[in-house]
Length: 102
Image (cartoon, rainbow, N blue to C red; front, side, top):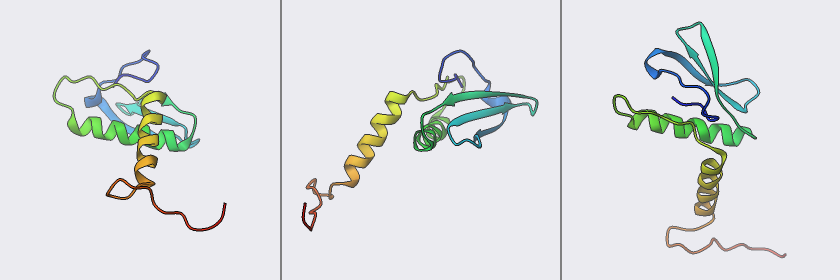
């Protein structure tokens, strides 16, 4: 796994834990139970949760010797915007009708 800032790389086979830190804005890794590092720091807990979800998906789809890069803010914001846009529309593509005054 390559860190978000592209300065560190970790062997996924030796990783013992990958977790969101207590501040809610960092994804961290523990390797062999002794060495730890930060995979990425994000602006909000929502972005951090999305980064973790992307990482899990990448790990599920990874083949042997694949390199996984931590998601950047641009990728995460696009994914969040797309998801929010889809939540505001029905299956037929039309916006949900809002009732009430302005």
